[in-house]
Length: 377
Image (tube, rainbow, N blue to C red; front, side, top):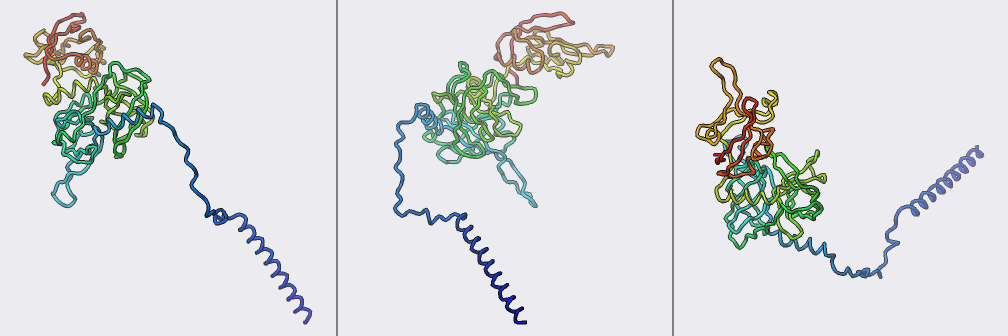
């Protein structure tokens, strides 16, 4: 019996010894592996000496100067829509979308994309100094995705953007985009002219030709903001991106300033763009293609219009009820026409009152007629 007790005591001591060894090992492991920041503290530590940077690179100076010069012209636009409050008949204006724009002149005109303000009941414009103004629509031209708003800010608060040219741009030129991507005000991105002469769609059947392609980052909210050259001049309006995700993927497009200058001037002057026309209505492209026509088919000719004056024939039913196809327009002013898009693009190269040569097919025979374009209402 006494032997059993001695054996149990010895076994207990052995277990305690093993636990002590294991505990010591765990403590040693913890001590060696766990960081001990107090070991690295040095009360005598001082700030590291700063290495002199030297002068900024010339490209950096240029970028800074461009931003300082142009950013006061850039505005933030919030498009408001009317919305009924739940459980009441009250209507309030709520934000629908945001975008960018820029000050055009000291009279308070602000230029942006049409799609930025499309469908809105009102617009709120925030200038670079943070002041907020109610914007009213002066005019819009959806075919070119352009719109002009006006605010009643005093001239001292308005810094018009410097306007350049886009006709002489070259691929590889540096460009600078300023806007409000994702609602972040006064954001600058840089890049180059990636390509020229691109086309982007604005409305179904209508494309903008000769747009500028750039790799300067353009994201949602940048639309309507300026694209600048290395002299800080406006060369385009950032309009859209090509991206399956909806975020910038290296391909952005800007409407060239030469087009912007003409459209904006006309919108400010007349509230609309005087588009040239022939006073006719065309058949849908699908019908013309189904009929195997190499142009656009005239469906209707308005009495008293330019088309009627030169004897254009519409599509009609004869006395027997058979359809008699009208004239097919194949060229305007020497520019080939194969679709309604070609037709409108060709017309837009001219102005109301200008005389152009119209190439048509009548009963399969080509003819040329001289027509004076009228202003479409």
